[in-house]
Image 1 (spheres, rainbow, N blue to C red):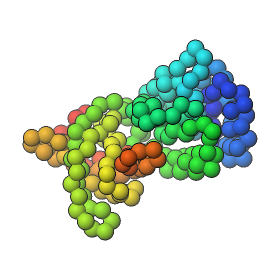
Image 2: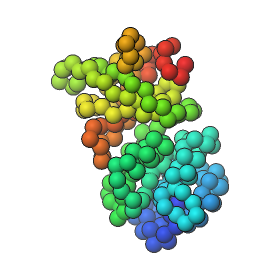
Image 3: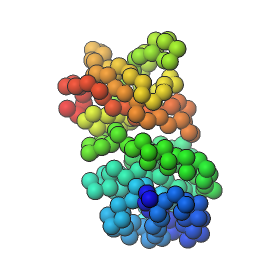
Image 4: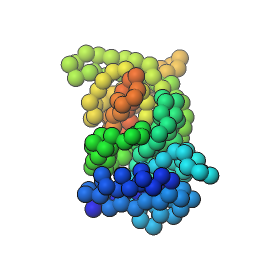
Length: 221
């Protein structure tokens, strides 16, 4: 049975999450954020549910620790917070969070997202360090009906073989796009496959993309 670690100083919330997820997951929880990393290392959870505002400790710092520390960086972190706002959500994504759920929690959506994430894995973060770097790009390709598109965007964070970005074109997971650096030379970076899409609380879909051919000119080569 997959394991879930809950980090929240509110005991009632921890109990509520446990009740709603215990039929599918083995649950571990703590109300002491300073214990969270030790518990993650001990139990090796398949996902972490993390509150942002806890006495004496920032959930933002803990999220960054989980998503950058080599022993935990492959564990998806789901933010569960009473704090809303697009800027907060975008900042959490930049820190590496997989998803953001506001309290009161929509458990149907949470269960669906957990199932989707844990069944599909996080291909773009496998064994690679991600850097919070904004890189201007041009994406081009075809939408499902065959219409050609070519649009400017920017990578929000990157690794040696992948990046994450917003795009106004709706594309299914598995689509192939051509990637170029948005500069005077429009330098070709290669082809990339979409491995994950996020649409909630964003003006445009956001895509995780992995390069599928050598990219000798990519920013982190």
